[in-house]
Amino acid sequence: MYDTAWVAMVSRTTDGRSSWLFPESFDFVIRNQNADGSWTSTGSSEDGILSTLAALLAMKRHAKQPHLTTSQKTHDLDTRIVKAVTYLQKELQHWDVGASVGIGFELLVPAHLSMLQDEGIALDFPQRLLLMNLRAKKLAKLDPKALYGPQKSTLLYSLEGFIGKIDFDKVQHHVISGSHMGSPSSTAAYLMHRSSWDGRAESYLRDAIVNGAGHGCGGVTGTYPTCIFELAWGVSTLHHGGFLEALQDTKILTDIVTYLDKHMQDQEGVVGWSPGFLPDADDTAKSVLMLNLCGHGATPDQMLSHFKISGGHAQTFFGERNASFSTNCHVLMAVLHAPEPQKYIYQIESITEYLCDCWSSGPFKDKWVSCSPSLGNAPQD
Image (cartoon, rainbow, N blue to C red; front, top):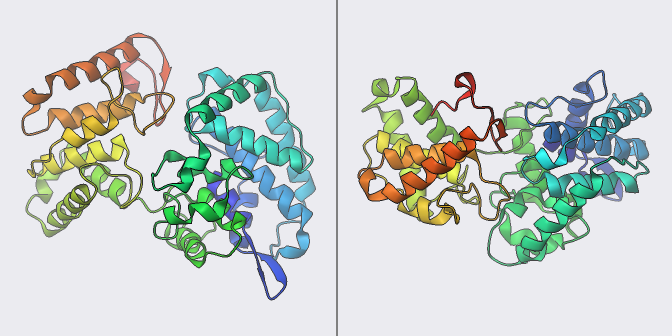
């Protein structure tokens, strides 16, 4: 819902007349508000808070400019806004900021709180100061203006968190196939805050609406497209279920292996969820694993050197605040299935020690998976 709300806020002025560019996305936001004023999240508590903040911001902006809309679902916006604010006031009161591990929440939640304050909605809560301190620490390590250079970073996935802090005209060179890292929210923010229109970004957002998981309903996923992710994770999951043997020597599996091998070579042994995007340890590990399961002999060397941190285990992206348990499971599996796993004894030991320490420390949170130290919730890899 979060990304859909951002897509719903894109407007364009043509021949002196402004209109919302994707009214179907705003309709999707309205249709999916819960009775308590929130928007359902399948992830962490901070994900639900962030989705509701973004949806509330979209409703406030649509309510302020009703003349721009062709939507038939704006007649009760004031009531919906009050319900969303009431939900957030209640939820934020008991939000444990220190225990949160959601990706980028320490940048995105403060940004949304600030934008809502500009719209006349002030939200205060007990751990707001802690949140702002986390934001300051994050920004101390990641200078947003570094985005003006050639180096990609995870900040490209959440450019909406830097509205008013960067010049969006200076990040145009990071656009790949119309998007910033395949993020509809980031691409929407980029399109909204450029000094001139970028037709590639508009086309990308339309493609995400029509051909993404929503299939034209107005909703978009948090990431689109995910070509490498879908193939690498799909095939490795088939292997885990015992179905991969049935696909051996088929054209479809040969084509998948050729596709993944090409992009692994093109990106020097590390890949992201789609060609050209910032590499991450999860998709790289799954790609290495899949290629080895299919007898292709992929080496994990580049993965291990690129994503290694001081403790010897892996980080999902460079510069992240907390390592991921599930990512390290995937990296370990990829190394164990390498042609000569004995060459990587140190890495195997380091990652295993990290995983055991996490597991023995009691309930813990992961960036991607909810899990606790019990057999029923153990990662299945």
